[in-house]
Image (cartoon, rainbow, N blue to C red; front, side):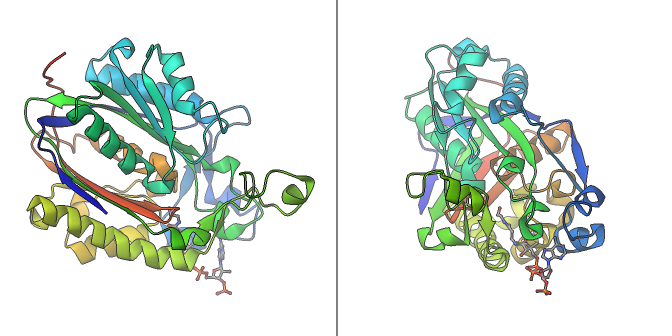
Length: 340
Ligand code: UT7
């Protein structure tokens, strides 16, 4: 568990952007591929449609427009970015990192760049890292992308998983600001839960072979009921811990941005925490679960709707493969900056 409050100046999100593949796949289309129905998917998950990448679309392709939008929103030139973190479980390839590919495409010359793997919690871990690097003076301007192309790693013959996931990416710029910004983080992991959500092959444990391919071992496998129980518990616990460590009562949270996995999980968490529905951002109905893309896509939606106003307290909590969880509390800022 990591709990921290910003002590070394103020660091905030100063720009935000997002991008999802054009192709929309509805539940009715899915019902033609596997034995399912629109009614089952909507009732059990709240998902109505998701975006699906084309055959030649990789993570960097959807991250680039999101990153450009975030930089433009922040009024930052790519050349001024000195740290690029891409949180994902679906990089373009094992290496080089998608962050290095993206930094090159953007023109973030000489920026440190790496990918971060923390399942669906990746974006929250990544903004915590960016915050730490910027507040410690190790970086001046960080670009953080959370994104995944899960459609390429789900088993399209497994109705228990393929209906849940989608593709998308969001990006933020993290830098110093005169006031407001991040108040605290709470991060954690329980590796004993790893087998509840994993891809059996393709790494050094079980490299790709004719057998692993025949056994469909390169696709994500999930114990949905166990992950559901874990999710409902940690979304509440992690949020309570970060609020507690920052001395902020839950009533002061203006905007709640939980991981977008399932409307039932979101409703359970917000009710238990005591956050009204109108303060909760939900877009899982349009995107499904986009893993690391989920929270930044929801943040970008809230920003576009005018729901993120300077001075408001925004609470984000993610959970996912690892099993991991993480929360961030931020006092939202307009893109006023300090320093150079
Ligand atoms: O980012 C973290 C990633 N994962 C998650 O957050 C997922 C967490 N888990 C969940 O959201 C839920 O567990 C699911 C949505 C995956 C499943 O909902 P559930 O209410 O837990 O359903 P269940 O697994 O208990 O399955 C109920 C029934 C089963 O049939 P039987 O055994 O009762 O006859 C399933 O075979 O629903 C069946 N089922 C389906 N039926 C129609 C499972 N998937 C489907 C489907 N369409 N797509």
